[in-house]
Length: 116
Image (cartoon, rainbow, N blue to C red; front, side, top):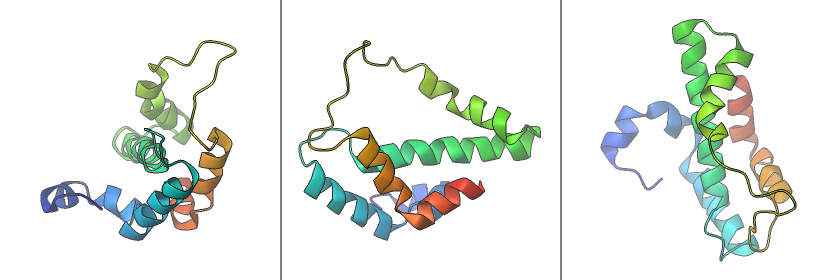
């Protein structure tokens, strides 16, 4: 998973969500669909996993509802500026819809996120 043993020990929940097999599959998909893109399928998956894990911590630590926990966990991403109206992000050979579908098609990942 391209992580040192210390990271695997400090963040076991992350490595339970994203397996080495998933990473290989996502990297293979990226190579076939969008080899020149600077932002890969793996990056989107890691962001989704981070939001889910943070939301779960808010639920267990602060007794927030799942909706409120998600809103708080997603807050750092809301600070990102979207492209100007009428423009789009170039994913070099793929689309946001295809990226989303590829992540949803990774059943263990999608299931784990939905259960958090």
